[in-house]
Amino acid sequence: MTASGLIPRRRLRWIPAEHRLAHEYCYFLHDQSARLLVEYEKAEAHLVSIDFASKGEEKRFKKVAKTDPIEAMRSIGQHDAARRVILNAITMGLVSDCLHHVYEALQCMEKRKSIVAFNLLRKPLTDNLLYLSWMFGDENSFFSSFMEGDPTLLTQKQLGNRRTTIIADALRQTALSSILDADFIVDSIFEAKNAQGLYGAMQQAVHLITAQRVEVRTDPQNFNFVFKSHTDNDIYDGVYDLLPPLLLYLAHVMLGLFERIKPMDEGAKSAFVFRTTHGLSLIGDADDVRAIRALLTGLLQPHFICAHCNAPLTVTTHNAARILLTDSCRCTSCRRAMDLPFSWLF
Ligand SMILES: [Zn+2]
Image: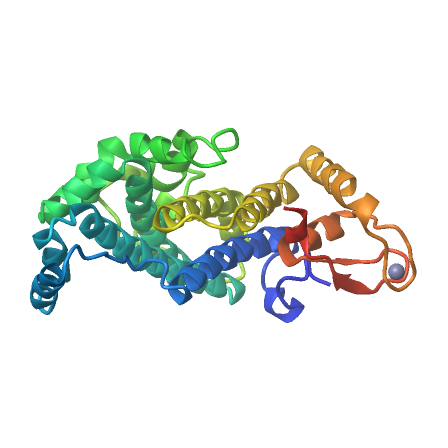
């Protein structure tokens, strides 16, 4: 049995046992975010509709739209709609690109290709996360810089001193402001001096030789990571301490940006927030795990008995993970697994 039942056991066999639930949680965060993307795409929620004031306006619009749809909207005074179209397109594109990289990185972790995983994590964590945060936290500033048309205004060098502010502005608008702080996120991803952070490993995974910064300098007579054994577990220890909260943050920024495109159904949104946020408690310390078990027991036990043997629901640690990550549980009396669709609570 895997930690939560989300990922088949054979796929988890190379992940150190103590990190399997954290890995499943990371996968869960990816899946929840990818589901939002697919639903928005399918519903074409990112498309903007325009009511034309007259036939003449419609004709004018269609003529310009053949070559430049954005300019066409501006030509009939629809400046807000034009801006929304641009922001929606950026959101969909950046989220999709980000999730593809995260997915492949998690696959690589399952295959013990951890250096390739770091390569794949570098862009979504250092780039996509920052631009998505900027767009979410301070849309006006992002939009005006983007529309300047000068890519040098968007480089990491330009944004370096503003990273903490950008992330703090975004974090404040999520449901995570009491759980995470911007300094932790910046230190984990961008701080070379933080030996426990991901910066050094991500840089060294991308380059064979790193010599510019003393903190991540290649060892003498060596190339970064090429002589490292794929059986070493230390990389897994570092990744699964940090990746779960970082992906949680990313998932909530994506949620916020999707809400700008079109507000979500309140129940679905509450379930997303509850499951993703409390999922982090599953991989916290013993007190966190006790607290989430007690919370789920209080919420669910009065409403649920086993459909096969009528036993009351017991929220073991395994069941807490199953309920939050997979909408199912396993009866502790008859051992049968069954659906426990969590979303109805909301
Ligand atoms: Zn039962």
